[in-house]
Image (cartoon, rainbow, N blue to C red; front, side, top):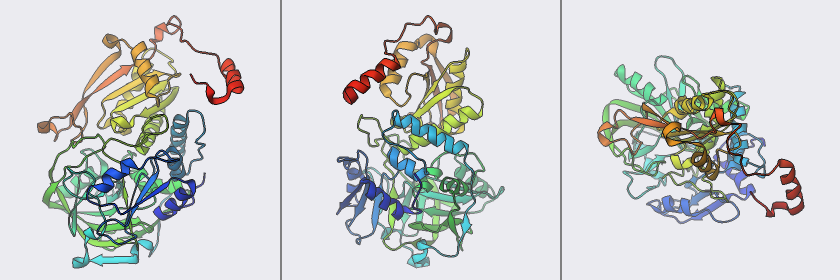
Length: 488
């Protein structure tokens, strides 16, 4: 399935052709959009893209879109991966395809251009007004209006001179400044501290709407020093067209919807938060964060804000499985990391959305030696895409599909022995978003990891109780005779 779009508008056209676009008109930015995005799941598509227009207090055409990558079919389209939604074990096959795409990805540097659609409207100085957009108050308890929940924040390392792109929540402070929260250990946080150590403000560009491939890539844990613009180009198969900001010198997508240039103050802070995060809690509370002073604002005519389905409650598919693009992407990245360090016979990885795609990792393997299962579970919990904010890392045998809760619970219940199968890793990388970390310790952000070996013990594989099942030959014959009326 080749990508046929380079911006949000082209993506929406393709989604409408697929019958997966739901338009809601007349919603109030103050609370209603946050609720309605969870309610708009009925119809032929279990998890449509929801586009809000004619939003209260704002002109027609100033829109908010939610849920862009939150279906296997759409995520495959965004990544340029062919995917048949009728394939058996659809989710695991898609995760494997993403893993293979990442493994063989040839990055392509961006192409600089002088102009683009994002420059249709340009504002500087006193003309800047971030409240001109219908930024939602997503949840009643939020500390402000978050224009950035599916954004791409662009920064440059002051020492190594490479451009990073990450996704971090962004709250409007006033008409010309914003605040972001960035977890400790994230690349942007490290770069910011380098600028601050030199007592300098950090140049920054914030993009609040682009080809959905941008936040899909910028929201994932690619290695330190890997420029995400080049990664986006690799997925596209062609260079990203970028404009170099005249104020910061940083590149930004020429086809973006809304872009701001500015500087992160090394001396000035204000209260950011709270915000109902993907964990389903106001885990990080409110705290002083560096103020980002906006020096220039650019946007297309009839701009679109791209919002994320947060609050720990993503939509579900027809059999009740939760859908979250981060789960697919992080699962593929962990799988690729396991193979890179030499863990053999990994059959699948799944990071469950109920754990915010980070707190519940399941790895399926074919056991080849004593300790293989423990090795896989431990590395899955500590490799870069799986290390932060984790909780449980579970390993299961190859016949257990890690994407199915029922199968995983069955394996834990019947193949693990609590006194022998569970280990604890202490002082692991967590962060303020972890609701279990006490308030007084959130600055340090340590937590522990439960490593659960839910495989048949290696030495008992031959003598372990036989599983009640049917041969593939008999299953095929019955399916041919009775069709889809049977299930196991």
